[in-house]
Structure formats: C-alpha cells, structure tokens
Image 1 (tube, rainbow, N blue to C red):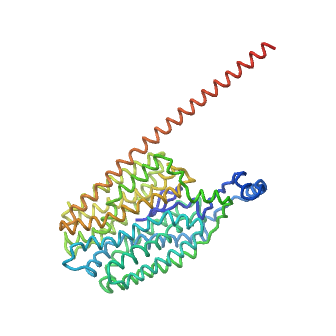
Image 2: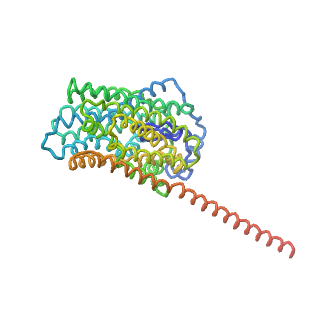
Image 3: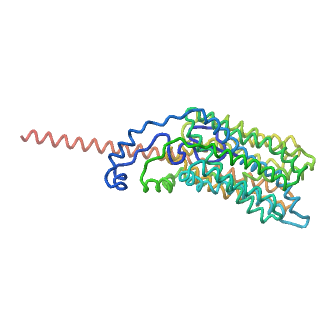
Length: 492
C-alpha cells in the first residue's frame, strides 16, 4: 500500500501528508495579522508586514535537481511499502523459522510482526508531520532512514518473535514512517504545474516494488535463508538514507508569531467539521480486514493448493492493478464534483469487502487471480482519492493535519486485523472464517461514508438560509433607516 496525500493530484501513493505545506512554508505566503506581529515584536508589526509583502513570489523550478528528488522519492515509496506489501512471503518463512508443530497460537503471534510494522507507519504520521515542520524534510528523512536501517539489520540477528516485534515491528516501521512522509512533502518545493505527473511517477514506485519483490524474496529465502535475506533488504534502507540527502529545501520559511506557529502545529479546527469526523471514523472502521490478505493469503494458498503453487503471482497482481487503479480512478475523480468523490471510496470498500469474502470460495487458482486483480484495482481507487476528499472536507489550509490524524487513527485496525485472522486460523484450522469476517468491516465503513454527502448538503442549505435571513434583515434595517431619514426631511 502506498499513498500520496496531495490535494493537487489524484495519483496518490500511500497514505501521507500533501506537498502543499512543506516544512511549514506553503507556496503562497500567508501574511501575519498586524496584531500578532505587534505582540511579538513590540509594535513594529507594520514595517515587518511591509517587508513580507515585498518578498517576490516563489517560482518552482519545475525540473532541474527536482528530477533527482523525484527519483529519490520514488525509491522511498517503493522500498518502504514494497517491503510491507511483500510481508506475506516473509510470513511463511517466519512460521518455519520460529514455529513448532505444537504451537497452537503460531499464526496469531507471527502475524503481529507485520501488523505492528504497518500499524506503526500510520501511527507515527501525526508526529512525523510536526517533525517535518520543525526540522525540515532532509533531517527528518535521513534520520528516519537511519533508524529503519538499524531496525531491519538488527532483525536479521534476532532469534525470537518477541525481539522481532521490537526490531521489525517498532524500530524499522518508525524509521520508515519518518523517511516516507518528507519524500512527498519535498516534491512541493520543486514542482507545481507538473506535480500531478511527478506524483504519478513517485507512486509507481510502490507498485513496481510490490510486483518485483515477491519473486526476489522467494529466491533469496530459498538460497540464503531468512536472516541473510533481511540483511539484503537492509541495503534498500541504506540507499534510502542516501536518497534523503537529495532533499534540498527551496521554499522560504514562513514568517509568523510563536503563537500562530503553535496553533498551526496543534490544529484542532478540523474536528469541528461533522463530515470530517464521519470520514475519520468511517475509514478506520472499514480497514480492520484490509491488511489480512497481504499477510495471510500466501499461507492460505499453500494450504489450499499446495506448496508448489505460484503464490507470488497473487501479490504481483495486487501490485499491478493497484497502480492502474490509481491512474484510472484518479482521473475519474477529476470529473466528480465536491464531496461526491466519497462515493468512489464507498464503491472501493464494497468491492474489497466482497472480494475478501470470495477468497475462501475460490477452489481454482485462476479464481484467486481474478479476485486479486479486482481487489488491487479498487485498492488503488481507495488510496488515490484520500487527499482530494480531505481537501473538499477541510480546505487546503488544514488538509495536511487532517490526513495526518486520519493515518494515525488507521493504525489501530491495520495492526489488529491480521493477528485476529491468525488467531481464527489457529483455532478453526482454516482461513475461511477469517476471510469471510475480513470482508464485513469494509461494507460497514462504506455504509458510514454514505452519510457525508447528506451532511454536506444539509450544511449548505443551512448556510444559504442564514445568508438569506441576513440579507433580509439588512434590507429591513436599510428600509427603516430610509423611512426615518424621509420623516426627518419632511419635518425640516
């Protein structure tokens, strides 16, 4: 999974903050109110305001070193979520490495490794947004890649699942989160007119790695074993660390008071929107079964079709059609007005839920391929329109924090879903019930999201009514004043 949360594009990568407000400095500078400046600078706010107004408008290079930054961001997107999406291959190897025939909770405990890793990436998102604002893209990305490298390399030496929870599930994942979001923010420093094209190329990194890593991992695990394979994957994180040094910031720093800066970082304005609250709780509600196929589908295929089944093809199908879905539905979303874009997400959850329930029904391997193709296509639809919907609900000024809070809330269902599925498999002897249940949350979450257009319509009707009432009241006041003036003139 990969998303790019950018209001000016529809070809998103993995859920993140948009590139509209990189390092706390938007493309078009917001001027400070004179009162705020005076409070901070002892009354010389007018002169400082004039100095800000005289600053020339920033012009994006639209290329140059930006192409290097684009490739570095593409590598980041691919390496982070490529490894996460290919965890199903590692999951089978972990069962063999740390399990025993007498362990009844083996799949439940092993699934926590991948679930913690994916969950922590989202859980850290609000914190990463603040770090990026305070320390900048380069420092945040390089530091995150370094932590991720340490976590993944340390995972190659552990000998128990408990230690792997910490090294892979927490340290590696936190590093990935801190490396990933700045890679999207920095794009707004170099591109504006071509930002849609650039984001499309960057998001393709996730699909390319999701397609190529499964067969590569299977080959490495067969020839080198689990521990050496993790060491090879550490090379990807080392290259990611080097890529972070290319994030040279260009946008000027925003001039604002300390009070305004603190208010921007701790933004609670978005929670006043009822539509956003519905969206922020509806999306996580739909995701309790989202990550289950990525973790357990490979083992399910082994149990259903044997160890010789070409299970890596299924992850490749998910990756390919997910990339195609982002391109197709991102373009379709351009023609869907306002908050009605949410119906695209509703349709995505509907299809994803139904496809999850069809996985146990497929007794032919070709049926599973068809299911994965459709699931990947609508997975891309769900991801690519997150930023446009957030933009419609809270506006451009609040969209970064809105998506950060949403990603943080998504961490809970992304974390607990696969372990629950593993527990059901350990207790019931098959994955059938787990996949049936995994399809229910997307249907419920999609139904909740259907309320958003209705809430927005009611809000607009109320605003129009208030505007009409205010106009009528103003007209009456004007009419009364006119009558009074006429009477005074007649008396005189």
